[in-house]
Length: 78
Ligand SMILES: [Zn+2]
Ligand SMILES: [Zn+2]
Image 1 (spheres, helix red, strand yellow):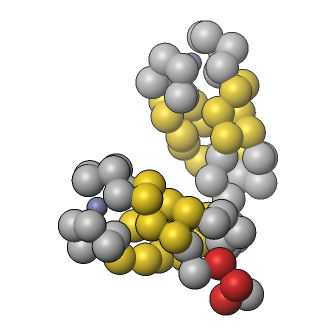
Image 2: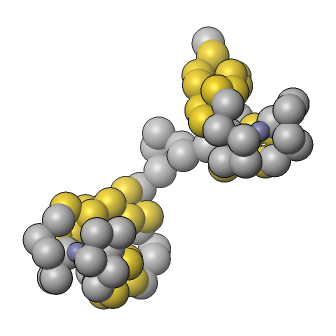
């Protein structure tokens, strides 16, 4: 089973076998991290603009990509 990801270096589509944690691009040799489906993602509402933000659990803060407000993550939930 193959999945697709966009190379973080040259933006081409890469195919990778499911279960891989990173993919080395054959064109530009950039290593792109694969977001694991089982990765524990949290959501919070930005305090500045009310956008829903995704963050990796374990992180302590999340910067909003819209208004650049630094939000503290409610990290001790798990
Ligand atoms: Zn590339
Ligand atoms: Zn915001």
